[in-house]
Length: 209
Image (cartoon, rainbow, N blue to C red; front, side, top):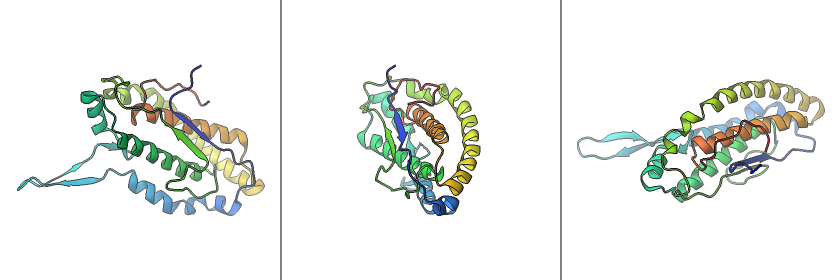
């Protein structure tokens, strides 16, 4: 089977993890969580219009450039490179923070280095993407949202078990690690399809690579 265009993986920490860092992860993650939270918030921009000065919001979802990109693909079939780079690097950064929060790595998330998390989007310029699909991809992905909601509920309970396991053994159970990695992979595929708009290939209902 041809691999899905959006690829994601996390290096398994086949070593003793830092128990103190894992025990207080809810607190140690706060500074970097604030950083990613600020980046993922839609930023208001000021536009001068004479006597009718107005504020407007750039169309984003989780910091990802979406509304301007949909219009660009619809009317010009062009995916500006800097929008592509922004969407990819923001997704990479967000995944590093998420993996750290889920105890998958005890190295503090970097704002630029890839570390143990790998996320790749296919190279796109625009003409290879369907002109009209960006208008409905978010809607077509609704079944995935539903499944992912249940999967993330399962992740919540799995991470609780992992937390206690690391405290007592210093190790991350591989089966639980692969399950959480699979949920993250699934979510990134949906994000690349429905929001980053880097592929027209519908995401598989699968945790596997």
